[in-house]
Length: 457
Image (cartoon, rainbow, N blue to C red; front, top):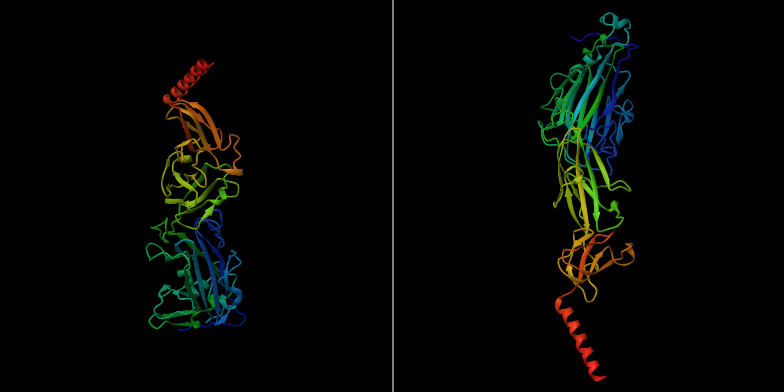
């Protein structure tokens, strides 16, 4: 039987807000910072970008102060619901849209920090409510949520999220977590996708017929014990990259574990290289570059697990990778495959070697190119006896500032003798052979000439 409700001068506050948007992901603030209470720009680095917008209606009237397009949310300021004079039979709906960018993600909807305030007792309430510390509004408000298609209307075929049986706020919003997408409920939200959650509330008895998608609200059951009471709850949306957390579950709340990756670079065959022209990707995500003036960077808050760091192709260089601490182990590969562990740093060194272009690889007249595309650095151990050897290094033309010049000459080089440049690595080696036949011919010719001159004098 409906209970009597004295409406004169009644004030029932429904404050659902103090929105805390938590993004459990790296890269949402441009520095791989793990959590944020706003949506974060997510620009310039790999990672995850989560943005939210909302449309709210109260008794069928659009509420612009409780609605927004994509924006950075401010905890305690941005609220999905905030009504200060709710009466029996009042209703409201909200459509919350969730936008995922940069990587696929698991997404969870959490309700935390529910408060059920008594706020004193007025005369009508005193006849039915003896409590002085705990309110009854959370029990008297009922909620239903579903996976919406974006029109803010529950329709046949749309899947309920909660509130089909138990509906009171005290039950469905009190430290509750609902999986929008996790490893136990279905596929991750794709990069570039938008998803919607609809929420309907009723100050009274809410009845939802999922077969016909009809909902009704009977306010007569909300009695005087809820007068002067208030209710608030924090709404939290969590997003976690799915690639590195394939078994993630929203319940129990599984906080991702993090390590870091140090990435650094060496360029061979080029003086004062421009490191900013090289770019990289973590797990094939959004490309990023080194900070200005640096040949290294540290990627913080990388989820534990296996990750791949790769360099985007750049013409004029070959690439090798090192995967041990400080890159001491170098392998020819297409990427760094790293295992990140909690609280530890994994290392990736990328070495680029300038390849032969333009007139690189040429030798002056009279010289033979003995070695091309040399990879031995500054020194070379001669493989024979040579009248002259040129260790060629550095770029051609005015860009070569090496004091040795582009060609550094060595005379009478013996087999197994080591010769070296001081600055630019050797690109190729030019030689002029010295053989015993050549020496004999010169001596013999000199002897014949001397004899002839003496005979004719």
